[in-house]
Length: 152
Image (tube, rainbow, N blue to C red; front, side, top):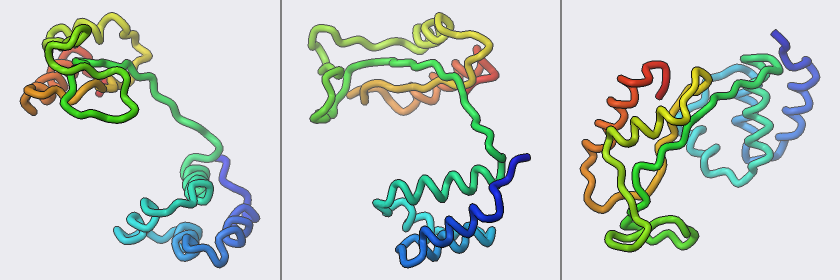
């Protein structure tokens, strides 16, 4: 396995000296487990490049210089949505022209149209339907898992 060279750790430590992420970087470099509070601090950090450097360091330590990919299939069960997101040009309101909603069996059929053995997951996206119960979504996941057991 290709591990990061020893001097990579020194460079990373130097890059975070004086940074608010410095204490977390030290934990990562020493192999310590991060706390919940550390996770919150990472989540709230605006240092996206620093976060990326830390994450890449951990990835290389665990997996060498390897990258992993999945192949997903998007499913959009509906474009009907009760939310008014300012940037969305896709969603429709109930009774608006162009709105649609798919039954679970129609979603499974749609998933099969784009399916190949390379597919590793289904990415279920779409509107927040105004009347569908939570059970619709759990039923959809069960039906997809039954038809495509390797995915989800």
